[in-house]
Image (tube, rainbow, N blue to C red; front, side, top):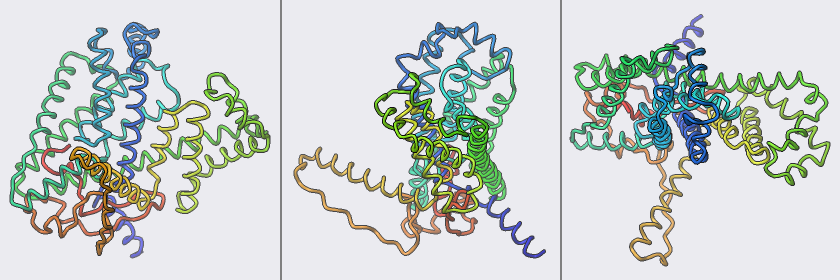
Amino acid sequence: MNRFVLAVSNAIARVTGAALGPYQSAMIRIGFSATWLLFLLREFPHRQELYGPDGPWSWNLAEQLVSANGAFTALMWSDGQLWFETVYVLAVLSSLLLLLGWHTRAMSVLFMVGVLSLQNRSVFMGDGGDNVLHLMSIYLVLTRCGQVWSLDERRARRTREAHARGEHVVDRVGPALWGVLGLVLVSATLLGRLDGDPVVPVLLWILWLAQALWWAVGRFGRSGQSRIMLDVIGNVVHNGALFVIMAEACLIYATAGWYKIQGSRWQDGTAVYYPLHLESFSPWPALADLLSANGLMVMLVTYGTVAVQVAFPFTLFNRRVKNVLLAAMITEHAVIAVVLGLPFFSLAMIAADSVFLPTPFLRRLGEGAARVRGRLRARFRQRLAGGADTPLPRPPKQRTPSEPGPAGSVLPQQAGEGGIPPQQAGADSVRPRQADADMDGGPGRENPENPDPTHVGFPA
């Protein structure tokens, strides 16, 4: 009984003490925002036919459908061309800024609004990837996806360094952004533009009010208890949303696998052959013919696809087997992107799969990307200085006595540990020091030395 109580208390402390999976949440943020951004940019010349007021799916038809199902879309607020162009451009900008991690709290909400507005405007556009993106954009607003690999992380690091030097830093962009978005939300509500299904409008209002409460407690709160309570609530919401994303990915694979088992073509091992010879899914006919020429290979790929999709949810209890199947599924989606010409579906599924990637692998990936970025930046500066012919020396590898944190993070001894005033540190100063765990079917733990950047100043 004592062991059970201890296990329950440890689980509660783990869920409430930190936002788990900072690297995994950053991966899904980057993956889904990049997928949507690339899709919008590729279809920019065809945006009028896809979502414009004069497209094949006209504004009147969309209005009838939206009035029947109550779906949220800002494009139905006006049938003017200027409004359509504004919404489309804002969708592109919000995707880009979310990809960079600039004020991820606000950008994730704008990203969700852009996805829902365009997809609900023309429901027959896109492929299976748009359904995944549709759901994940809603879950993403509930996560702290800017803890690492973001401009928010850099801003938080610089703020901590300024506090260590005794400087006072005030975030002016956050409150201004909150005020502008609040004005739009209030105007839309008073004009009746948010009528229909109340789920999205209520979510928008809750998020907007929560931002104000978070900023007020951080700015005027006399004691740290209120900040700790809000921090615990934020951790629970983040961890719950991350769990839902993982469950959603498992559900997608499980249902797809079990439906395939019921098909006769999947049972006799020939199902993969037919899409390779459909004109709509054959951008490279010669490559499709090459892959389908071997009957044994077609049968193995057909049965292997079903086996991997059905077995994947059960492999989360074994880290090594899970990683092997995860690599197989990511490879499968990459092949689908090239052979069948479905790049955005594959990118959306790879982004969903990335929530299961192990933390050590993601750390090494981030460190490698940081080294490449540093070398490119040094070469660029050298070319500007007129010394392009001089070879650059290889930077020495820095060794730290502790386990390395995320790329670009500040070590405790560098940041001046203990130099942050208690009223600025808030709940971060009382967090226990615990190491990041591997992905044993779930995300790793947040690095206590790198708290959520949205906790600094106005929430991002």
